[in-house]
Image (cartoon, rainbow, N blue to C red):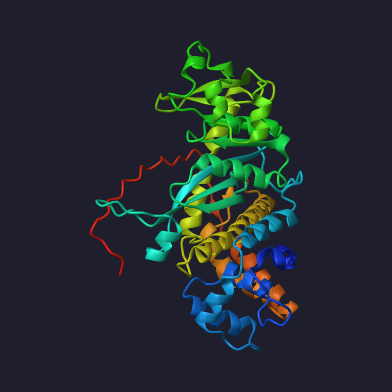
Length: 437
């Protein structure tokens, strides 16, 4: 049976350190709703309206309390630092033994595969929101209300390890450096491969990953390192990138800059891949040939597509762009609080897929099946709070049993050799005369 205790354990473990996450002297023992209550409510609210959500939460799980006003809710949540929700999600991953060499989680030849990428998130279009996110119009163009969201994700298991909301124009490279710092205690560096897209060809980033004793695969733009690539004739070849003064100037970390100022080159490996359309592209890596071959490097980079499907799930299944406020602190809370639900979903998906596999093999069916994701998310939305906050252990066990039965009853069969071509998004056109109502 699936264990849900890790969810409340993660919330309680983090919220005990209230001084780290609370602005001012709030959420004391005398408060009607504790910090753990607020964390639970904001992480799993129904996303209708804030007032409707709090009324349902109090009526169903805290009936001894009076229903607070919308003004009180808005005031109280403004004292909660959004980073609390990131730390709850990370604590949950610790409790399910994500960092350990756990056979529950998928690897590629023993390596965890992580990818870094950004996505544009729509945000509420109000003057105060635009001001807080530094969105400025020009005389001829009204810029859309958007923020930049950057993250690192485990592309085989689906987990989001770290994520950051920033201004729309924020550079992805500095965010990637920060992500690597934030997750270094969550991974085994020697057993992790970072896959990066064309937006990340930067020697300082390679240097950081190398100094972590970790590995990377990055796709190069056609105009990257032209001089060093001129004499490359083989599809898999060593390459030495010169550490010139101009390249060293782009190092921002003093420690890394000092280390690499004493080196002449960074010695790597460049691989040319030909896709099904006959188009060629180059991958740069520090993985030795004796560790992974040419074909395997290409396979790993293709798996990077998992981060795109994860963003689709976030936006269209978890509804990460649903906001309950227009202040920046509320928007960050709403986004970061979805991390826990997203990681619970992927953990349960892994668990249910194993249960379905075992059940099918017992009757001699060795085809590949997966849990119905829409059904799993629907069950999470409808039953998770009941499971977590039920006063009766007997009722809780019955709900878990029904949850379990619903998710394994009608799995989806996975068809082999199916491919989904990447769809090019049309450029949005905005009416410069538009004004929000």
